[in-house]
Length: 130
Image (cartoon, rainbow, N blue to C red; front, top):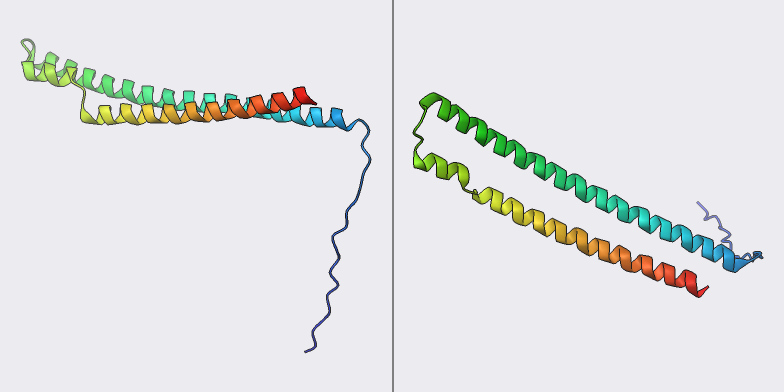
């Protein structure tokens, strides 16, 4: 089989004249600023959703322990053993680990917010300079 010759087109550059290019650049930068602000709000909403889920999980766990404690008290009446009271009042290791993980996640969200804020400030300064 004979090889076919392929004609490669050279890169062509096209020049277009824009009326008022500075205003076009400003408009593009304003859209970029708006986009960054929307992303920032989205991150806040996402963080709130995560916090809500964790709080609901925590509430469910507390309600379970309250219900089981109420069932114990209802079955045996008073007096309740001191060990049972201490178990209900104490914080388990799982809850401590969960709270540390939540704190780390909050720090990551705060770092991302700072990054978005710096990008937003840079875009606003660029608009001011035009």
